[in-house]
Image (cartoon, rainbow, N blue to C red; front, side, top):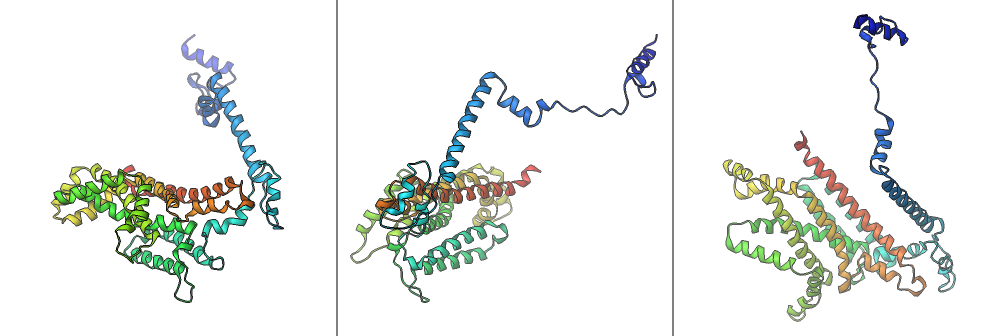
Length: 394
């Protein structure tokens, strides 16, 4: 029997007509899918978590600990928690919280002290003013994050908004009562220090980074000395010098506001660190970019502003935002010179004997606020980096 006849017979024996299986192979058969156990979620689990008996044991043990931890956290934070307690006699308002013996959270301390944590010792009846300032700061961040607003008018928006915040916080005009800076505190102080600090430190950092690459020896030496001296000492020492040492060099009768002195120290410290990040971006550019700009006949500032800096800053977006996030959290160090920022206000809120012992809830509340701002900066930087580097994936 020939090979062709043998294939037809085999195909017929398998239940197919000879016409349907010419050559013994069925025409138009759909492709077979890969086994479910080797692809998709099941395949990933088998390859990464259950590939051996040791991995399986570790996976099950970690899953048990994670599930048990989640159940305990949910039970403590939500199921057994006390959200508010009636105020009766002094100290009795925390009896419901203390009766839990640690099995549940006492969020009543946040309900009772949230105004002090957010606004410090600002007059109670004027709390709408710092609350409005916080909203203005958030609105300013949102507008500045949108690329369609990256125009010259944005500088005017910043100036008007910051002036409005100053008027609201100080008062004394437009029918607003005057509130001295010593009464400020809470979240608004954190936003003031972070916003003004980074807003003024960034252009300072750009100038210092350009100065370190200057061909003029005097400018280069001054920039190097500034960066190395500031980066060689901790921020706490600069705050101490601004608070204690600096007033000693002022003439008699001249006094600079404590918040302003702390703000200047933060600007100088942040500027030194950001300058090194920007300098790294400048060094990452190829020499051809500089030569191409020179070939176009551009001046130094035209070359720097239109060609060099945009590319350099695009390369260092991740470290820049990482530095921003770090300094946003470092504003809490101003507590050592007696400025009531968010974290200091949270610590002070539980000094009252009736609420002592509930610090975990206050720190979680403050940590959540820090997390929201830092996470927003992180996500925005990721989206901005992906958008600006879209041309590289083409």
